[in-house]
Amino acid sequence: MTQLSEVSNQADTHSNNYASIELTVRELPRAYNKTVSVVIPHFDARILLERCLFGLTVQSYPSHLMEIIISDDGSASQLCGIKEKFRDRLDLRVLTHERMGFRLATVRNRGILVSEGEVILCLDCDIIPVPELIEAHLRWFHVTDKVSTIGLRKFIDVGVVNPSDVPQLMPELREYPDVPSASNRYLTVDKRLPELRYLKEHPYPCNCFHGSNIAFRKDSAVGVGLFDTAFDGHWGYEDIEFGYRLYKAWHYLVFEPQALGLHQENTVLSAEQRALDGDVNRRKLYERLPGLEQYRREIGYK
Image (cartoon, rainbow, N blue to C red; front, side, top):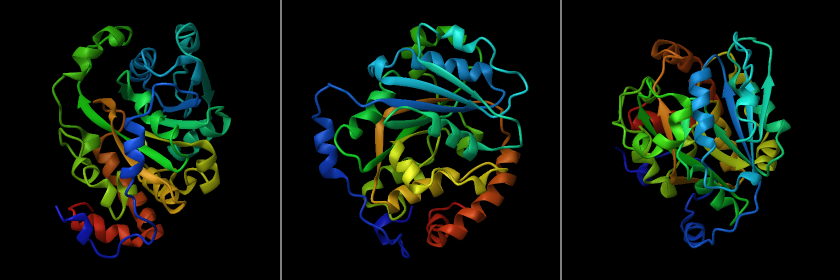
């Protein structure tokens, strides 16, 4: 991999070296007061979503500071009964939208706009959060307003796991074998890991800002214009572009390794569709951030 410090045509913004902040975060007492809204986009993946929600029932972060917002993109099968199922476990709201094609940016934005939390945590519905995920993200926001955080993914096959068994199976799920994932270029380990290790020196840290497991302040998101709905209609890259605007607004993009999401391997979006959609949205990304295209090609991406 190209040494990140040697890549030319770097983003004309600021250093992403958050080392001094990290020292404070690691020593922070476990006394929290920041409210968080977990925004989960969903489309026709009820079982995946329920596993995600059961993971949220056993978070180490104080439950009275958390709300969960499911933003449903017009599923054919409505989420009937899901609020009642989690009534005594989660502060849960469900938004439903008319189906007008793939609209991930729009669906996320609607969840953000109705949220009441100071911090937004975006979590895909196919992610099972480990118990410390929310706490790991939120520690940073108790130290500074100028951060947005990035969690890691572990790709596992949980096809036979009953959603309600997730809380008690969590120790075993964390040890499940890594599997090749269509959402990870058929690699078993998060493809961003080499970049995340150098994120403090990364010329384009937004390249790691994947919307499946990230957190940012609500007022910061609104201030930079939320996710760009021009990316609607096709999968991909709206999260990287959004991360770049947060970075331009002088936010550090921080890698938090303890914020681990267990990605449930699935076929909701095929690899073929990802490739076709990615070609369209990647071009939109490069139009907005031309230097990123050169960087990505140097590290072996399209």
